[in-house]
Length: 281
Image (tube, rainbow, N blue to C red; front, side, top):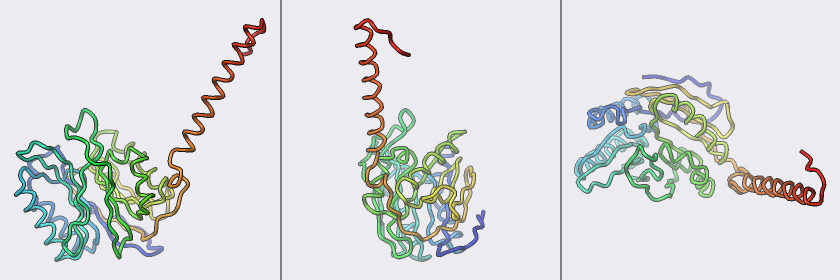
Protein backbone atom coordinates (compact mmCIF):
# COMPACT_ATOMS: atom_id res chain seq x y z
CA UNK A 1 0.00 0.00 0.00
CA UNK A 2 1.28 3.44 -0.89
CA UNK A 3 0.70 6.42 1.40
CA UNK A 4 1.03 9.99 0.19
CA UNK A 5 2.03 12.05 3.23
CA UNK A 6 0.50 15.53 3.49
CA UNK A 7 0.69 17.99 6.39
CA UNK A 8 -2.80 18.50 7.76
CA UNK A 9 -3.42 22.24 7.54
CA UNK A 10 -7.19 22.03 7.67
CA UNK A 11 -10.16 19.71 7.61
CA UNK A 12 -9.71 16.73 5.36
CA UNK A 13 -10.55 13.06 4.91
CA UNK A 14 -8.49 10.06 3.85
CA UNK A 15 -9.44 8.85 0.38
CA UNK A 16 -7.82 6.34 -1.92
CA UNK A 17 -7.39 4.97 -5.42
CA UNK A 18 -7.48 1.33 -6.40
CA UNK A 19 -5.50 1.04 -9.64
CA UNK A 20 -6.74 -1.82 -11.77
CA UNK A 21 -5.52 -3.46 -15.00
CA UNK A 22 -8.02 -2.02 -17.49
CA UNK A 23 -7.97 -3.94 -20.77
CA UNK A 24 -4.29 -4.80 -20.39
CA UNK A 25 -5.23 -7.82 -18.29
CA UNK A 26 -8.77 -8.94 -18.97
CA UNK A 27 -8.39 -11.97 -16.73
CA UNK A 28 -7.73 -9.71 -13.72
CA UNK A 29 -10.79 -7.66 -14.66
CA UNK A 30 -12.95 -10.68 -13.94
CA UNK A 31 -11.35 -11.20 -10.50
CA UNK A 32 -13.80 -8.99 -8.64
CA UNK A 33 -12.81 -10.22 -5.20
CA UNK A 34 -9.24 -9.09 -5.89
CA UNK A 35 -10.34 -5.45 -6.18
CA UNK A 36 -12.99 -5.65 -3.50
CA UNK A 37 -10.43 -7.08 -1.07
CA UNK A 38 -8.07 -4.21 -1.88
CA UNK A 39 -10.92 -1.82 -1.19
CA UNK A 40 -11.60 -3.53 2.13
CA UNK A 41 -7.95 -3.18 3.19
CA UNK A 42 -8.03 0.52 2.33
CA UNK A 43 -11.23 0.99 4.32
CA UNK A 44 -9.52 -0.72 7.25
CA UNK A 45 -6.62 1.73 6.82
CA UNK A 46 -9.00 4.65 7.31
CA UNK A 47 -10.13 5.59 3.80
CA UNK A 48 -13.67 6.97 3.64
CA UNK A 49 -13.87 7.25 -0.15
CA UNK A 50 -12.47 4.59 -2.48
CA UNK A 51 -12.31 5.10 -6.24
CA UNK A 52 -11.29 2.49 -8.81
CA UNK A 53 -9.37 3.47 -11.92
CA UNK A 54 -11.21 3.17 -15.23
CA UNK A 55 -12.28 -0.34 -16.27
CA UNK A 56 -10.89 -2.09 -13.21
CA UNK A 57 -13.57 -4.78 -13.42
CA UNK A 58 -15.79 -6.30 -16.06
CA UNK A 59 -19.24 -7.86 -16.30
CA UNK A 60 -20.26 -10.15 -19.14
CA UNK A 61 -23.85 -10.76 -18.04
CA UNK A 62 -26.60 -9.04 -16.04
CA UNK A 63 -26.11 -11.61 -13.26
CA UNK A 64 -22.38 -10.94 -13.08
CA UNK A 65 -23.03 -7.21 -12.87
CA UNK A 66 -25.68 -7.70 -10.19
CA UNK A 67 -23.34 -9.90 -8.14
CA UNK A 68 -20.55 -7.32 -8.36
CA UNK A 69 -22.84 -4.49 -7.29
CA UNK A 70 -24.25 -6.54 -4.43
CA UNK A 71 -20.77 -7.24 -3.08
CA UNK A 72 -19.88 -3.57 -3.44
CA UNK A 73 -23.00 -2.55 -1.54
CA UNK A 74 -22.24 -5.02 1.26
CA UNK A 75 -18.68 -3.68 1.52
CA UNK A 76 -19.75 -0.04 1.60
CA UNK A 77 -22.40 -0.76 4.22
CA UNK A 78 -20.14 -2.87 6.43
CA UNK A 79 -17.15 -0.51 6.31
CA UNK A 80 -19.21 2.70 6.14
CA UNK A 81 -17.36 4.02 3.10
CA UNK A 82 -18.17 5.48 -0.29
CA UNK A 83 -17.06 3.10 -3.05
CA UNK A 84 -16.82 4.21 -6.68
CA UNK A 85 -16.31 1.01 -8.64
CA UNK A 86 -15.67 0.90 -12.38
CA UNK A 87 -16.20 -1.86 -14.89
CA UNK A 88 -16.81 -2.75 -18.52
CA UNK A 89 -20.23 -4.14 -19.27
CA UNK A 90 -20.46 -6.36 -22.34
CA UNK A 91 -23.34 -8.80 -22.19
CA UNK A 92 -25.52 -10.66 -24.67
CA UNK A 93 -27.23 -7.42 -25.73
CA UNK A 94 -23.92 -6.40 -27.39
CA UNK A 95 -24.32 -2.87 -26.02
CA UNK A 96 -20.91 -1.97 -24.63
CA UNK A 97 -20.77 0.26 -21.55
CA UNK A 98 -17.95 1.86 -19.58
CA UNK A 99 -19.37 2.46 -16.11
CA UNK A 100 -18.69 4.18 -12.80
CA UNK A 101 -21.06 3.37 -9.94
CA UNK A 102 -20.86 5.20 -6.61
CA UNK A 103 -22.20 3.27 -3.61
CA UNK A 104 -22.87 5.13 -0.35
CA UNK A 105 -22.25 3.96 3.25
CA UNK A 106 -25.96 3.14 3.36
CA UNK A 107 -25.45 0.59 0.61
CA UNK A 108 -27.34 2.73 -1.89
CA UNK A 109 -26.34 3.41 -5.48
CA UNK A 110 -26.07 7.20 -5.71
CA UNK A 111 -24.40 7.51 -9.14
CA UNK A 112 -24.80 5.08 -12.04
CA UNK A 113 -22.76 6.65 -14.81
CA UNK A 114 -21.87 5.61 -18.35
CA UNK A 115 -18.96 7.28 -20.12
CA UNK A 116 -20.37 10.08 -22.26
CA UNK A 117 -17.35 10.55 -24.56
CA UNK A 118 -15.66 7.34 -25.75
CA UNK A 119 -12.22 7.84 -27.30
CA UNK A 120 -12.64 7.90 -31.11
CA UNK A 121 -11.28 4.82 -32.94
CA UNK A 122 -10.26 3.26 -29.61
CA UNK A 123 -13.49 2.62 -27.71
CA UNK A 124 -16.26 0.99 -29.77
CA UNK A 125 -19.12 1.71 -27.37
CA UNK A 126 -21.67 4.37 -28.30
CA UNK A 127 -21.59 7.76 -26.59
CA UNK A 128 -23.90 7.97 -23.61
CA UNK A 129 -26.08 10.75 -22.24
CA UNK A 130 -24.11 13.96 -21.63
CA UNK A 131 -25.22 14.42 -18.07
CA UNK A 132 -23.01 14.58 -15.01
CA UNK A 133 -24.64 12.88 -12.05
CA UNK A 134 -24.04 14.03 -8.49
CA UNK A 135 -25.03 13.32 -4.91
CA UNK A 136 -25.02 15.39 -1.71
CA UNK A 137 -22.95 13.87 1.08
CA UNK A 138 -22.44 15.03 4.68
CA UNK A 139 -18.70 14.29 4.50
CA UNK A 140 -17.57 15.72 1.16
CA UNK A 141 -20.33 18.09 0.10
CA UNK A 142 -21.77 17.62 -3.37
CA UNK A 143 -19.90 14.88 -5.28
CA UNK A 144 -20.03 14.29 -9.03
CA UNK A 145 -18.24 11.90 -11.38
CA UNK A 146 -17.10 11.45 -14.96
CA UNK A 147 -14.68 9.11 -16.73
CA UNK A 148 -11.32 9.82 -18.35
CA UNK A 149 -11.89 11.39 -21.84
CA UNK A 150 -15.01 13.17 -20.55
CA UNK A 151 -12.61 15.65 -18.92
CA UNK A 152 -11.25 16.63 -22.34
CA UNK A 153 -14.47 18.58 -22.92
CA UNK A 154 -14.49 21.76 -20.78
CA UNK A 155 -18.06 22.64 -21.72
CA UNK A 156 -19.20 19.22 -20.49
CA UNK A 157 -17.39 19.34 -17.14
CA UNK A 158 -18.74 22.88 -16.71
CA UNK A 159 -21.93 21.17 -15.54
CA UNK A 160 -20.06 20.87 -12.24
CA UNK A 161 -20.27 24.67 -11.94
CA UNK A 162 -23.92 24.82 -12.93
CA UNK A 163 -24.79 22.14 -10.35
CA UNK A 164 -22.46 23.63 -7.71
CA UNK A 165 -20.46 20.40 -7.32
CA UNK A 166 -17.67 20.53 -4.73
CA UNK A 167 -15.72 17.35 -5.57
CA UNK A 168 -15.47 15.58 -8.92
CA UNK A 169 -14.27 11.99 -9.22
CA UNK A 170 -12.31 10.96 -12.29
CA UNK A 171 -11.61 7.34 -13.12
CA UNK A 172 -9.08 7.11 -15.93
CA UNK A 173 -6.87 4.84 -18.01
CA UNK A 174 -4.24 6.13 -20.39
CA UNK A 175 -1.09 4.72 -21.94
CA UNK A 176 2.46 5.71 -22.70
CA UNK A 177 3.52 9.37 -22.54
CA UNK A 178 -0.10 10.43 -23.00
CA UNK A 179 -0.75 9.68 -19.33
CA UNK A 180 1.07 12.66 -17.81
CA UNK A 181 -0.06 15.07 -20.51
CA UNK A 182 -3.67 13.96 -20.13
CA UNK A 183 -3.63 14.33 -16.34
CA UNK A 184 -2.05 17.78 -16.45
CA UNK A 185 -4.43 19.09 -19.10
CA UNK A 186 -7.44 17.63 -17.29
CA UNK A 187 -6.35 19.37 -14.08
CA UNK A 188 -7.50 22.63 -15.69
CA UNK A 189 -11.09 21.50 -15.16
CA UNK A 190 -10.54 21.97 -11.42
CA UNK A 191 -9.27 25.53 -11.96
CA UNK A 192 -11.99 26.45 -14.46
CA UNK A 193 -14.81 25.33 -12.20
CA UNK A 194 -13.37 26.01 -8.73
CA UNK A 195 -13.69 22.35 -7.75
CA UNK A 196 -11.51 19.66 -6.20
CA UNK A 197 -10.81 16.64 -8.41
CA UNK A 198 -9.84 13.20 -7.13
CA UNK A 199 -8.25 11.45 -10.09
CA UNK A 200 -7.58 7.71 -10.08
CA UNK A 201 -5.87 6.70 -13.30
CA UNK A 202 -3.76 3.75 -14.31
CA UNK A 203 -0.50 4.41 -16.22
CA UNK A 204 -0.85 8.08 -15.41
CA UNK A 205 -0.98 10.53 -12.53
CA UNK A 206 -3.40 9.91 -9.68
CA UNK A 207 -4.20 12.17 -6.77
CA UNK A 208 -5.88 15.37 -5.67
CA UNK A 209 -6.10 18.41 -7.96
CA UNK A 210 -7.20 21.68 -6.36
CA UNK A 211 -8.94 24.78 -7.77
CA UNK A 212 -5.58 26.56 -7.70
CA UNK A 213 -2.63 24.92 -9.44
CA UNK A 214 0.01 23.67 -7.00
CA UNK A 215 -2.25 24.26 -4.01
CA UNK A 216 -1.09 23.18 -0.57
CA UNK A 217 -3.26 20.04 -0.69
CA UNK A 218 -2.38 19.09 -4.29
CA UNK A 219 -1.04 15.53 -4.37
CA UNK A 220 -0.07 13.63 -7.51
CA UNK A 221 1.85 10.42 -7.96
CA UNK A 222 2.76 8.39 -11.04
CA UNK A 223 1.09 4.98 -11.05
CA UNK A 224 1.01 1.92 -13.27
CA UNK A 225 -1.38 -0.99 -12.56
CA UNK A 226 -2.45 -3.29 -9.75
CA UNK A 227 -1.78 -0.98 -6.79
CA UNK A 228 -3.50 1.27 -4.25
CA UNK A 229 -2.76 4.77 -3.02
CA UNK A 230 -4.02 6.72 -0.03
CA UNK A 231 -4.48 10.51 -0.30
CA UNK A 232 -5.72 13.32 1.91
CA UNK A 233 -8.71 15.12 0.41
CA UNK A 234 -9.31 18.69 1.68
CA UNK A 235 -12.89 19.48 2.56
CA UNK A 236 -13.65 22.72 0.77
CA UNK A 237 -16.66 24.12 -0.99
CA UNK A 238 -16.59 24.97 -4.67
CA UNK A 239 -15.20 28.42 -5.45
CA UNK A 240 -17.16 30.55 -7.90
CA UNK A 241 -15.20 31.25 -11.08
CA UNK A 242 -15.60 33.43 -14.15
CA UNK A 243 -15.48 30.37 -16.36
CA UNK A 244 -18.28 28.82 -14.32
CA UNK A 245 -20.48 31.79 -15.25
CA UNK A 246 -19.40 32.52 -18.84
CA UNK A 247 -17.88 29.29 -20.08
CA UNK A 248 -15.94 29.83 -23.30
CA UNK A 249 -17.66 33.15 -24.05
CA UNK A 250 -14.51 35.18 -23.36
CA UNK A 251 -12.35 32.98 -25.57
CA UNK A 252 -14.84 33.01 -28.43
CA UNK A 253 -15.22 36.79 -28.05
CA UNK A 254 -11.46 37.20 -28.42
CA UNK A 255 -11.52 34.92 -31.47
CA UNK A 256 -14.37 36.90 -33.02
CA UNK A 257 -12.68 40.27 -32.37
CA UNK A 258 -9.37 39.00 -33.70
CA UNK A 259 -11.02 37.62 -36.83
CA UNK A 260 -12.92 40.87 -37.39
CA UNK A 261 -9.72 42.92 -36.99
CA UNK A 262 -7.89 40.67 -39.46
CA UNK A 263 -10.67 40.95 -42.04
CA UNK A 264 -10.73 44.73 -41.63
CA UNK A 265 -6.97 45.00 -42.18
CA UNK A 266 -7.22 42.84 -45.31
CA UNK A 267 -10.15 44.91 -46.60
CA UNK A 268 -8.33 48.18 -45.89
CA UNK A 269 -5.19 46.95 -47.69
CA UNK A 270 -7.21 45.86 -50.73
CA UNK A 271 -9.01 49.23 -50.91
CA UNK A 272 -5.72 51.12 -50.79
CA UNK A 273 -4.24 48.87 -53.47
CA UNK A 274 -7.17 49.48 -55.82
CA UNK A 275 -6.79 53.21 -55.29
CA UNK A 276 -3.22 53.02 -56.46
CA UNK A 277 -1.58 53.06 -53.07
CA UNK A 278 0.86 50.58 -51.67
CA UNK A 279 0.02 47.81 -49.31
CA UNK A 280 1.85 48.28 -46.07
CA UNK A 281 3.18 45.04 -44.68
